[in-house]
Figure 1 (cartoon, rainbow, N blue to C red):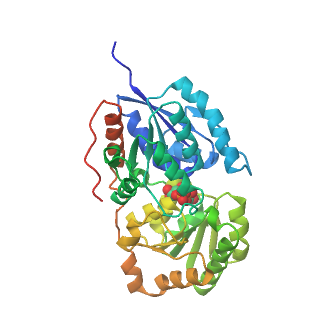
Figure 2: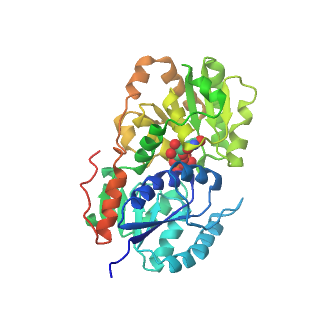
Figure 3: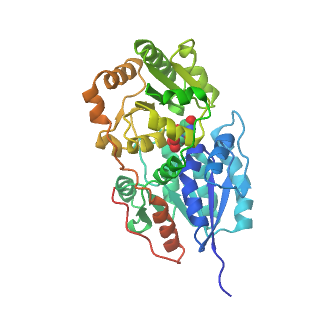
Length: 383
Ligand code: UDP
């Protein structure tokens, strides 16, 4: 009897997880050696559905663990309780988790307890501070301890793992699948559905802003809101565009300061295709997002990061990303510098691809094949 394809289960719950997992699910689906099983946790339900649609993914199981206002422990408990019977029933040959959310840590632990090999996609990112970003840094470290295969996006991430005594043979440098997702999506040329966004492509300077991180909720985010007001008033010729996260805490902190400004455009979160188009049309990107820090440099956009540390130092070293924190005057000063000084702008606005070459999926699939004894891994991504 010939053995059937190997079942590789992937558990994901948030928009950024979906964006980074989608190319891998497609890659596994196109390879006869594998039978991918997509399990969604439903953590960011609507935003997740948008991404699944772009990549043609239909989830096999929905754990439906999301509830408004639930605690991290409540979420973890639900993932354990609802994933375990799914693991038992499907009995996958490996479980893939991506990144650093609480779903990731819980799913990795649940699979480990069932003696299912854990594969960590985007492994080895470290801020160096267990409490920041919270709780992601802890989630990443826990997951690294449980994984059998570490798909590190960059050599820096691999080195972080080796410093923690992870076996070198278990680490493959793949590049980040977010760049595969970005290229796939940009090729589709998705149009804007909001006419206000269409108008932006007519040559207006755009300051694109996304912020959502837990550490910035409250006063830090209010400061960012005030800084945006100062900038919008100082530069009436620019358009400040905010696709605002659905979290009410983000909205309450950020939006009141921006009321009544004609050149501030607030939208709902954009579907991935539209968001990548907006990044490409932007002049400066101001963000605390991990994924955006990885994508915008490859589009040649300067990125100012609303954080004081990052687990993604590669583009900072390459000079296209700068950490500026969340203080009102720092945000105003750093954005103004880029808007006023063409030399300073040029210095930051060059395309670099430290995070991937668009072939991460192929390397990930090959590494999985090696783990499961049906192939050989490919040479590491060189960066
Ligand atoms: N993104 C999107 N629509 C938006 C804002 C962001 O599709 O309105 C994408 C973005 O391109 C990136 C990902 O979402 O790939 C980042 O998600 P987020 O900032 O929520 O999380 P993080 O990357 O910080 O984990």
